Amino acid sequence: MPDYKETSAAGHSWQRCTQVVIENHRGATPLVRFDEERVIVLDGGIEARSPCGTFCVDYDPARPIALRDPHSGELTGETTTYAAAYALLYSAYLDAAVERDMAAAEFTITPPEGI
Image 1 (cartoon, rainbow, N blue to C red):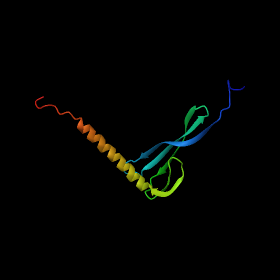
Image 2 (tube, helix red, strand yellow):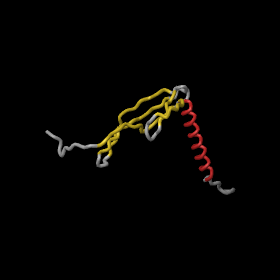
Image 3 (cartoon, helix red, strand yellow):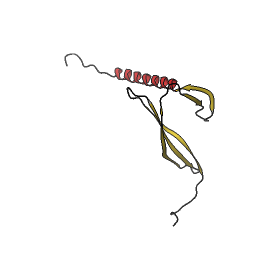
Image 4 (tube, rainbow, N blue to C red):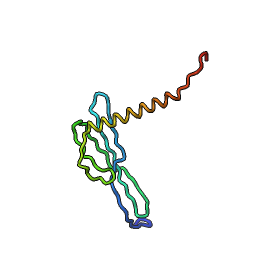
């Protein structure tokens, strides 16, 4: 029995990373987890997304990363390392945390003496 109002549809699909999680437990080797999804876009503009996988990579500071242009996916010919990526993310975290803490300090209300 055919599906009710079944039709064929044209469009395109691709796989993408939706989330990168760094598990950095004290005393353990950090782990990088990549979560992926499949995106399907039909010619009429309807879009569907569904999870399609997860994989993990142990942190190895010397492991090379071939850099790609984020718009085209083309290799740039440059490389970096997991250590450099770690330093970048560590610095991004500290910058954001300090900014957050400074903003919170600006809004600290000190009650008048005697209250």
